[in-house]
Length: 221
Image (cartoon, rainbow, N blue to C red; front, top):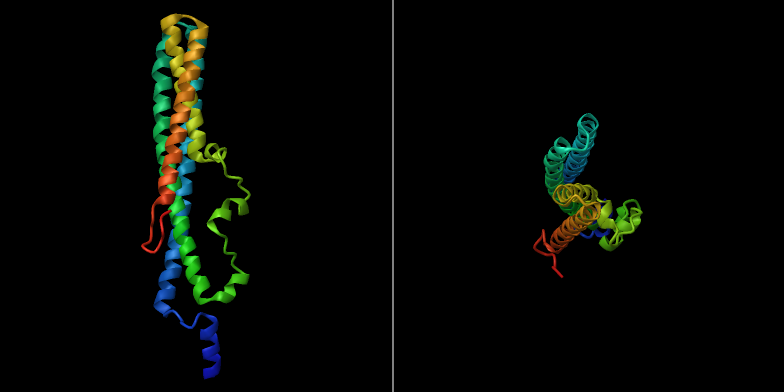
């Protein structure tokens, strides 16, 4: 019996964690999984609210155009509505980005706990896949790269927000110049500028999140 216990300890790395530690680790793992679900639900919920507001606002703008024609009322309504929707998109983008980074940190902490499992139960390696960080996107079927910035919730919101900002700028330029070419050029320039700015903010935020160390033994490169 003693020999069997010695063999089990050798297989598990020579040290068996106390039951309290196992309870703490499993509770932490479960809590982090719940926290990840909350961040994902919040990000998708906020994006749905934003898109619903955009849809309702554009329908209202169309009704105003139908009822009053493209005149002073239409321009006044549009110049109030479109910047408001763009602002809602900006705050939605900010919170969705925060939720994404929060979810990333939770996933990182779960990966640390999986390392604890493999340390004390190396026989689980055949049943629980340990994927290096640089291969996680590939394993999930995600290509990564520059295009990945646009397929996140924050990236999608940034595209819609840029379109709203560009539309507001184009409408304002129409009121000032009454020339379609100038209005279109102003709208495109503002939309591209807003989109580049928001994507740059997202990229910088993710870079800081990946560089930040959550644990004392991690090396920041």
